[in-house]
Image (cartoon, rainbow, N blue to C red; front, side, top):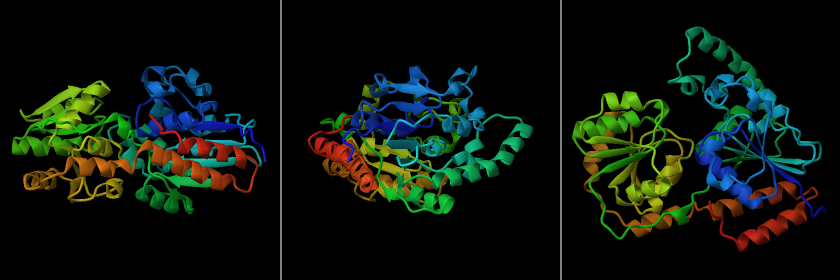
Length: 387
């Protein structure tokens, strides 16, 4: 047994502040001495929890304009990931929604991959490219590369010792794309950052999201405009101008706000609207942690987290009319804020950490490093993870 387990963390790219990056933040807290390898990093868009981390980038970081046009270099990421030298590590934990699953571990080391989704570009090209302004010729060439990327993705997935899916729909996708089983561990929600307000809710619905087309914020804007009900939209993104072009007078766009203000809006909203099809969706659970219900499209990760009548309701068709019908019926529901928050607690970061460490222990059970993971498990039981 080796008590000095050498650990590395690998992530696709650190240029956003979404749910995948919050997983990396928890991994950093669990293994603070582990370096984080990633293809590129935008330090202006780095979570506060990762500011002190040892982040190591690849040669892609030196490409001019990479931070603004990072999606256009999709064909280089597999090469960049495979160029990472991980020969010094006994355990590699990858956080992957595309490329980190291809982290090249040494013979005898263990690779645990927390899979947010198999590579969207390769397996769902149309959805990935939606809203991207590229010439038809370039899109055609890009689509031609998807077959090669699928082959690469499926091949590197075979070398992973343990695949962990972040939701039921991703577990099904892992089976379909890779032909492999995976464990299910829901991503972490920092429930402690939220609380139930002692003040009554106010008369507005809320959206908190990046404004990109696949999030389907247009459904919320159209439904609330049609009904003449107040909607506050928090967030920014390339779809913002289009959304504002058809928004009614009851819809207000607040842009990107500090976390403290977002929490206040969550605490007082009538409900959070979640009209997109997401692999999991942490924002609805953050609203739940504030004691507020969610109105979500019936699909994707929302099926794992929304219990109709307890912490939210579904609308059945991904169109504005179906959402509007649900909004009309929503007035007839009553909600228990404390019960809603209690439901969110089962997705807390400490639950995620304990489940993840247990899975890592199982993956290492026949190899050196077991004693080190046992120590991590003992430490975790006495330590509540804070994102």
